[in-house]
Image 1: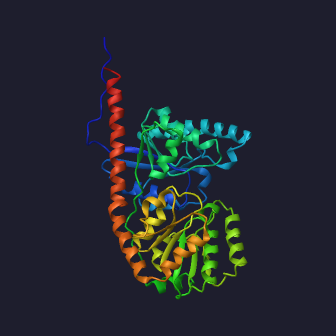
Image 2: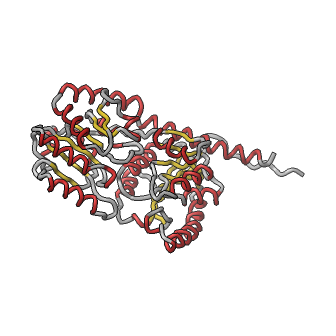
Image 3: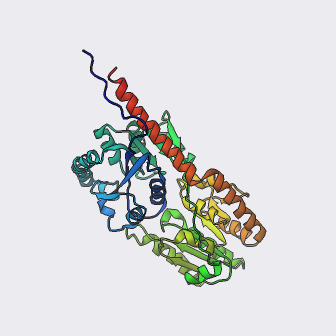
Amino acid sequence: MSPSIPEIDPPATAPRTLFFLHSGDDLYGSDIVLLDLVRSLDRTRFSPWVLLPADSAHVGKLSAELARYGVPCRHFAFPVLRRRYFTPVGSLRFLWETAKSLRQMRAFAREQNAALIHTNTLAVPFGALLARSLRLPHVWHIHEILVKPSFLPKLLHRFAVRSSDAVVCISEAVRAHVAKDVPAASLVVIPNGIRPIAFSDDSPASLRTGLDLPVEPLLVGTLGRISSWKGQTVLAEAAALLRQSGRSAHFLVMGGVFDGDMRPLHALEDVIREHHLESTFSIRGFRPDARNLLRALDIFVLPSVLPEPFGLVVTEAMAAGLPIVATDQGGPREIVVHQETGLLVPPNDPRALADALANLLENADTRKQYGEAGRLRLAEHFSLQLFVDRFSNLYSTCLARKKNRLFNSYR
């Protein structure tokens, strides 16, 4: 006697529960992308749960925003790829924590009737293991261009492809990086989209006063975590070159450090002191309203030394109508149209960066033209609705494939 065909849920029933596993509880690029995605999903179709690692619970920035928008969130002690695991003892600890957390998470997933696992960033291989143990569809959302340690990218890229129903890359640059290790992989590119930003009605002068910055001269700034690869020291060196050439501007870096690592901040402060920039170069810490303060700037710069996987802050600056100067690599190369919405310069080149900034500092019409063109490009290519629609369609496809696989297995 042939086995009976299992019942398949009819369409348009209760929303399907999606589990989102993320690597931290902060509010930078991948955190903001996840926040905007889960709070924008159609709740008649999908019910999101966000699961965060317990080792970042002390930060509490993303979880607080999730609570504000009514998205369920819970901290679990699942392991995230951090430096402490890259030792023989650390590897054993990683395996032990994985096994322990897997038992707890499987029970919770069954309790919530999870239908699909979405792993956000490469740092959470645990998501793929959870999905496989539950026989659920798995979407791996890759935000990184991972380079070090050298053995890790190939290992993770191959694991992601083999353990996922869909591997989503946030830019063509990320897709190409993954494809180098898995050439035959079918990879999906879904560029990040940003929610319309309710910029403050305050004047730029008022915003600068609130940040304890001078109202004059023109303000050049960058937002984001202070890190050696983000190139804030290159910006300081370019500022020194501009001052030597007699050009007047004030510079702003706004962002915190990662997990208490003060070395990048101290390196930036050393360059500022070395070039006597204390009166023209300001550093401000992390602020949850940083995006709303972009209108205080006249020029936005992203001086990253290594390729940005996407460059979400570039799209936010475009929403503010700012001209962009960014390094000609990674995601910004796909976002910024050279000499149309901004200028692209070689990475780690203070002179080229200074020349590009000088061009914009001296040309108000060009700044306005680039800013307006950037707004139009943003609306056409990087809207939040387009981003959410693409992911919603992908979830539906993965869930439908699961049903078809289940049906076919009983034929």
